[in-house]
Length: 99
Image: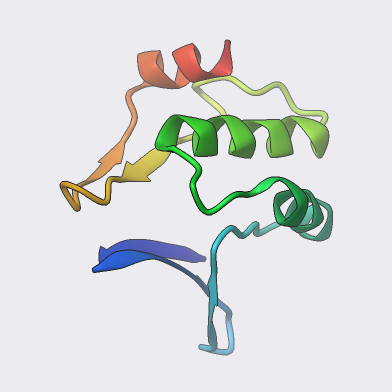
């Protein structure tokens, strides 16, 4: 499970079944985890915008799955540093990002 939030700075943790928490700048879970994390290590930049991060995540998914990506098969959530609000994007907004 991935847990994200903002406590002064954005934080991202992977919670493992053992209960261990590991902090990351960018992370993946599930099948293809190794390949996606290798891709993210190369492509992720500290200065990335939210729209850039969404594009990068979708690019990583496209490179490592044969499944059709659409608003019914994926969810996108964002947590903005300025507002500290967590938002799950609506299907229409997910579709816009998929184009």
